[in-house]
Structure formats: structure tokens, C-alpha cells
Image 1 (cartoon, rainbow, N blue to C red):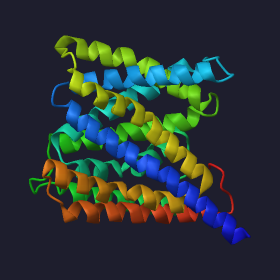
Image 2 (spheres, helix red, strand yellow; image 1 turned 135 degrees about the horizontal axis):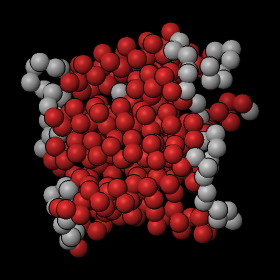
Image 3 (tube, rainbow, N blue to C red; image 1 turned 90 degrees about the vertical axis):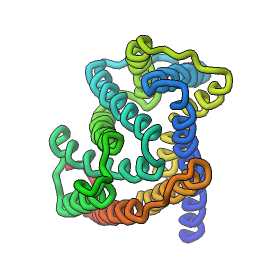
Image 4 (cartoon, rainbow, N blue to C red; image 1 turned 90 degrees about the horizontal axis):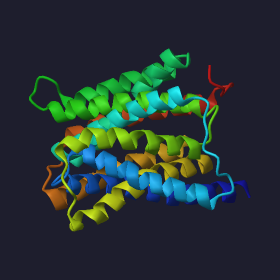
Length: 294
């Protein structure tokens, strides 16, 4: 009976992860298509605008209609970091291969662990240190500094991962006070005027052909994280994280066939090194006698 329940949970989590994978890939493709006409700031503005409409619709459809927080300062800092992270990510999507963007993004657990140690006073255990070292090693394999592979766009995506790490760390703190729907509301409400102010000086009205891609980016930005959260709520991270790694080969196939992007074996090897360190840490966290945050 336990085997049946476990198998059923893995199947359901896999289905949610399929939604995650397709959401993030669709958002990347949408960002690449939008970059042909729009600036990165405009893409972020429309992403927040569409996301705000979706969040407000969900709030109105639910019983809980109160969107209030006593920690506006935390939300503001978190969303400035998140906005900078998005800028670097979409800038990279428009400038370098999709696979390289996704691979560099896998350094996120490294920066989250380091920032959580500083901001949340979480203990840097040996497994976490191993994960950090593996993550840094994988990053060096992908970027290969000094060999002409690293460029401004790659550094922008790397900076994006650091900003996302800060955003994730602050999110963990904010979840002690506010619900996910409140966090998402302030995410779109704060980032919307930032994106507008930064894009108005170089405004390009989107053509009719771009509006489906704007809807894809705005919708998938929310659906990807929602599906990931549902998968993690059903199955352990040791099951979910390797499935998330499938984003890399899948987006590589998309880049190869639709954008004539070369498949770089160093990207796969570096990402595999990072994944190994991440899994070592996750396994250790799950087998530790005390799972609480130190």
C-alpha cells in the first residue's frame, strides 16, 4: 500500500513538473521573440501588468479578498532584487543561447545558501558547503573565464542568479508573515511601476503579432512557480530537482532546431556538477535528525 501511495505521488508530482518545464521553456521562447521589438524593461512591464490582472482575478474569485502586509519594506527590497534578477535573465535570453541561460541559472542554490547564512543566520553545514563548492565548480566549467566564452550577457545572467538568490532568501522570511497570494500581489504591484518608469523613455508599442507572446510570458511566469510549488508539496526534493534539470536538455533541443544554437557539452557537464552538489545537500537535509532551520 505504501509503495502504491509513493508511486502515485511521484506520478502526480511528475505531471506538475511537466507544467513547470513547459512554463519556463515557453517563457524563455516568449522572451526571445519579444526581444525582436521590445526592450527588456518593456518585457518586464508587460509581464507585471498581465500578472497583476491574473492575481487580482484570483483574489476576486476567492473568499479572501484582503491584500495587506505590515512588512512593505521587506516586499520592496525583495522585489527590487527580483526585478534585477528578471532583467538579467531576459537580457541573457535575448543575447546568448537558451541552454547557457538555464545552466547559469542553476547556480541559484549556491547564492541562496550563502545569502541565507548571512541574512537568516542559517548554518552552513558541510553538505551545504559541498553544494556551494560543486556549484562554483560547475559555474566555472560553463563560463570558462579567460577562454573567451564569458561575456557581458553571461555575467548578466550570473548576476541575475545572485539577485534571485536574495529574492528567494527574503521570500522565505516574508512567508512567516504573509500568504503566497499577498506575496505575488506585491510582486506585480511593485514591479509594474518600476518597469514602466524604466521603459517609457524608449517605448515601442507592441505589434499585434507580439501580444500572444506577451500573454505567454505573463501567464507562464506565474504558472511555472505554481507548478513547482505543487510538485515539491507532493514529492521530495530528491525526486523533483532531477526533473527540473530536464529543462536544460529540452531547451537545448528547442534552441538547436528553432534558433540554430550549438549544443555545448561544457554546459551540460557544468550543470551536472551543480546538480550533483545540490542532490548531496538535499539528501543530507532529508536524513538529518532535525529538519528545522538552524
